[in-house]
Length: 433
Ligand code: BGC
Image (cartoon, rainbow, N blue to C red):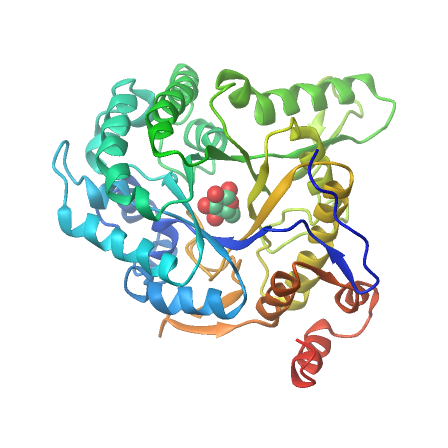
């Protein structure tokens, strides 16, 4: 059993050695990833403002960003490497890029961070995409070879390996038939969808076996969604909830059982299924149902993180590898953080073995196919000047990390009708944060 957190009059205390971090991915922050399929797709499908272009220029500014994370008492960081930079052509490796990533990881280690490294986060080198991408079973081999080349180079700086980011989301986005095709992929190709999913599972199993040699925990970051029946006594709604939970949350783990040292959870979504007069249940749009939503229309539903944590709990350590809100209103982010972390605390208290939380994201960044309007960052980025501007929520998260828990004075903010930013700024001024 994991150590249960102790109650404290001043603090909702988290277990010792808890990882407090933030997460990013290469294509979303680095800029100029010109050799991957996303870059090519952006040029063909989006106006300039929705292309990744310089992104947050973290390729050059990584030290500055890591200094900021450090100054906010974070003790860990999740990031990814860009395959297309490292292997721009089949079997041709760019040593200068490998050296670059060594420097990046070293910069994290010298600042004392625990490093969680993602090996694949949605982008493919153009040459892989041209050969059919993940739909082609050869990609499993290409990926394995890439990992066999890069892992020995970087292993000394890596504490956790995340082999894949959200294979299920990728399969959904790249193969869906809806009108709004925001991602590269062969939309509407169902056989391709199935092959892709199975290829991901195979790739994960093979890479897991290989990475075992480096003696560090290995897992994936999986988008885990919270589902609910709209009417508590509707059998059809309940069945749909079970099927959705099974397919979207558990199927990948089922196919790769025994090949995970931890469970990585990215939590963003809560859905309700409703049957009125139609046969098949429909998903209720949160905003049509007058629920609180983020700037992307995603429901703000703190209880959902408790649901998914308890649903996925099977004894393995759990890391929340991503969780965040897109909002230009930082008061909302502050409340979001405190409220969601309070639910994480409750889940730990209920016996779930949770070992870390990575807020998405450290800095504002490129959101797939949507450009730069979705502001997920604790730190604002002015994309014209690449200036970094701390948001009050960053200080609040720092306060939580530093105390390894949620101070009661922050919990009080949830009940306040006053402007949170004002309150937080007051606390900063008075030296309380
Ligand atoms: C992805 C990130 C993305 C975030 C917000 C996650 O599903 O891993 O790349 O930016 O969600 O959409």
